[in-house]
Image (cartoon, rainbow, N blue to C red; front, side):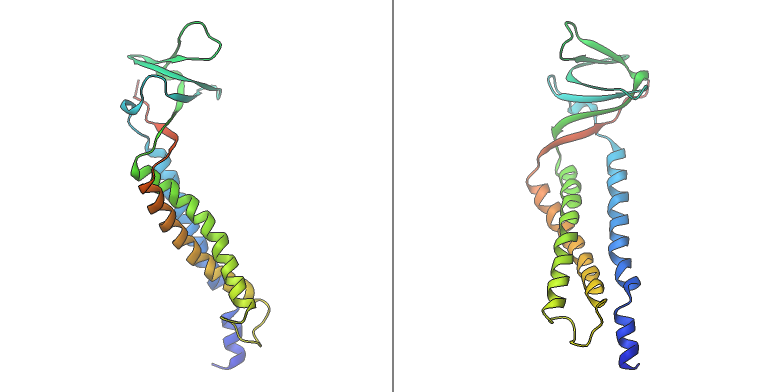
Length: 182
């Protein structure tokens, strides 16, 4: 392979784009499937903040009071009495709860991957511009190629670091609660 062919092959952005694109796709699909799973409704206690999306696309923010056989009873700000919501009117229920280590890992991995994307791109550009990973006669497009390669490493590193850190330091957040079938 001649030097000209090597430069053309090295600066091909299609090879550098595949890994970050694949990683972003995998992470977004895993986040969607994780959000669709839903948590057990027994995790909710009296006074927890909840958001309910009703079948007519209205969202009600309230405090959880109790489960009833046909629905949920809420304390809504401004209402004198508890507000009953039938199960058949609910599309989605989210509660603000302490995340489990597994939920924290997924949340931290997504945040870490997003941060790692930018850190990796910056490292790739800096290493290219300082000449550490590029030759003097490399084409200008090598900056983009190097940035894309390092973005992939940043996504993986950020997802792992963010996931493990968050699983050891659980925080609170909005958790989807699985609705009972009416």
